Length: 303
Image 1 (cartoon, rainbow, N blue to C red):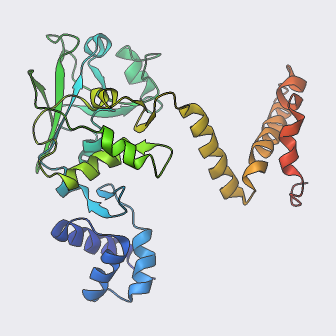
Image 2: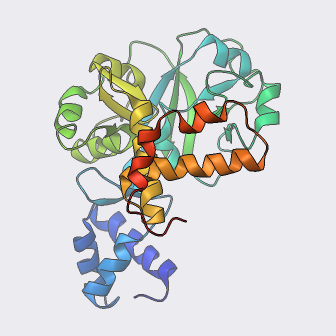
Image 3: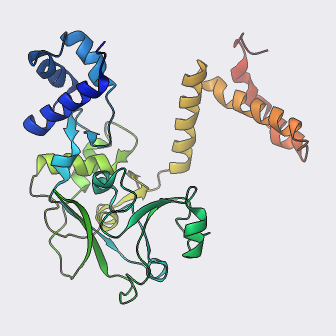
């Protein structure tokens, strides 16, 4: 394995900036050709590389986000609540905000998280709001006072970072995302909108070079449902999907069969409730579905 991961990451990012998106194998070969080590060891290391500006495309390639995202613009339609609070939900902007990663304040706005900045956001009237648990953009007070619901706020990127501005309509025609979503959904249950935007930028260098309609409206026009950065066919149960995903991760972490994970989680909750003297409706809460525990049969290490 390569001893200096930081040095390897710098070399990998340099190659991606110079050559464009590369698969893990292509990147490992390029690193080996530059004298970084054995290709087989390098391939193991490349798979584990992580950095704010290292993106992963749906087609399986790695990409340098600072190069890919520079010179792009995304828009968001303001709501009355956002105008009153000078706080803007960021889902329409997320594909570009990696360029602001690690910066507490960029071009007059800051990224805040409900859990970490609850007191600050409560002062703005965000406490209990529709996105009180999500990451938001906090603007200086009074920034939006002259704006009206429906106005378009644009986030643009350049070599110097990210910037907010207002744009007038009409804007340029938006890309048709429906064919992309339809094709990708033959491979998975949901589409990651952020990664799909990145892929579009690779496939079409002219995409999002000028203001268009917000991503939320593009998804709606394509006739798909959206939850955060996940997109799926109409009627998709995102809550159930999230629960199944969590159960799989939980099972993998504990080395359990997937069918045993819900029962173990229930038992852990039961022990916690008993330890905290929380015995209200305990029978109904923890034993109302006895079939749930069938998944623990044969899991010998649980005692």
